[in-house]
Image (cartoon, rainbow, N blue to C red; front, side, top):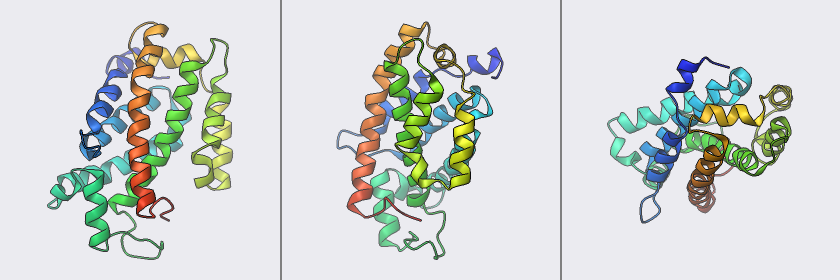
Length: 216
């Protein structure tokens, strides 16, 4: 794990605040806050060490792509996930077959983060509700099996399973959140996870509506 200085720079409240801002009153998902929420999640994973490298490295790459779209000349089209989907589909910018010329469309890029968000949501919910002696390796593997694993090749699934075996215990995760004693960390998760879940569900329904959930 990283040293104390790294932990001081991160507080799980960053993630909570970002996902709280993510949804508008009309349930549009603001991409800027979605990306900010993921930046916080990557900090959280990185402080825990290289165990989650197979997730965080890919997430960093996807965050950079989406940030570039937001800052680009068509950034106004990427203000929300809804506007991004409409713009890219209308413009033929989404590679629906895996053989086209738009392998890094915003829609495909966000889908990879969306899938990983489900894994983290499931894992953190187990972490929140588990007992002191519960094994984080089991919780993480179960969450992975219910979400990301079906999207990964065998070699990645095998590496992930080995990585989960060396996860630190439950107290270490709460300490890294940097929000106080364990009961405060549990409360913070209790506030953050419904927000993350709602953002996930809104995105899931939008992608399902447009048949984008299995983009290659």
